[in-house]
Amino acid sequence: MIVVAIAAGLIGYVIGKPAPPQVQAEKPDPPEKPAGPKEPAFVKEGLLEGLVAYYPFNGNARDEAGHGHDGTVVGATLTADRHGKADSAYQFKPRDHIKVEGLLGKPKNVTLSAWAKLAEPHGVRGADIVSLGLCVTLRMDNFEYKSTLGSGGIFYAGQKPGYTWQHLMDGKFYANTGWHHLVCTFDDVNNKQVVYLDGKQILMAEDKRPIVYEGLGKDSYFGKCSPASTGTGSTGWDFRGVIDDIRIYDRALSGKEVEGLFLIEKSAEGLKATAGKPAGAANGGEAGGD
Image (cartoon, rainbow, N blue to C red; front, side):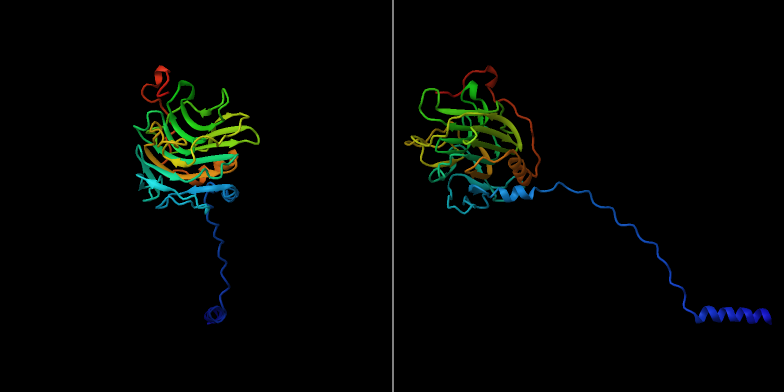
């Protein structure tokens, strides 16, 4: 009986008293996701400074920088851009072009930037992406003379002996190698000209001569060489392929800014870094010269 009473008392104690709170083991925090590449916000904001004209080609050739430098499309057709977005870039074939009236203020310091997917056959002398009245040019696959082969920028230094057009070409050709981001900066203050491909500097020169905007074309063109003061212009540098995201600045972007711009805008398809020689380049002779 005593044992039963004690047992009953213990049962009553357990039933009548609340159970002690259970201590739950703390769950470990979920592992942090590895940080992705940070978008250079400071670069993104700075890329508005000095932006004279911007052509993202979102269904049209309007200047999205808001300065009214809208383009007139002749022959070129809308197509998918490097990210696969429809009607967001322009497809060019020889004689197609986009014309912008004027020379965008004739900037003393200039940056020309564009994405291009060059195909063959293009013009027999090369393929112009941007041409400000023959005075400042962004060109791919120049094939005019042995000493000026390749891709890069050109500026006009005037009529004095030994001046004329100054070429900054890398000696490489990019037709049929996919999308590429080509940039050329002309820094008149520091007498420096730099060419960038896919975010990396590939060429630098130090020419003290300024850009001369007199005596040549009066308007700007995309996809072809600007005509001189008279005539319709040579077809020797007609572009074949796709062009997108043209930017024109009245200052020379820094190397960090160019790299940041490339990271922001880079191709979703991936880039083919290889570059080859066009047919006939191996002989080292002049090609298509006057």
